[in-house]
Image 1 (spheres, rainbow, N blue to C red):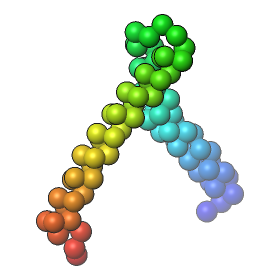
Image 2 (image 1 turned 90 degrees about the vertical axis):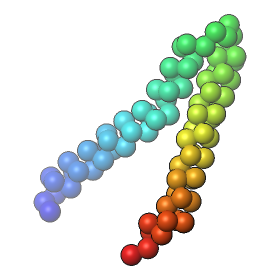
Image 3 (image 1 turned 180 degrees about the horizontal axis):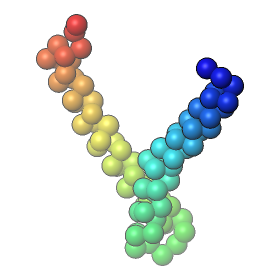
Length: 78
């Protein structure tokens, strides 16, 4: 692999993972922050954090249940 290819790959990884992280953290937070009916900055931030934590908790629990289901179905066995 040439030096320029390594540099381009590094730049690509930085941009990709930055966009990925912002897309899953900052954008949902800002979406709820703008849509909430709270009147103070602190109230908007608290509501946005609460809504996002609740959402990611539910998604995480469902993913955990799915992994347990796969484990009991021996989907991980080769």
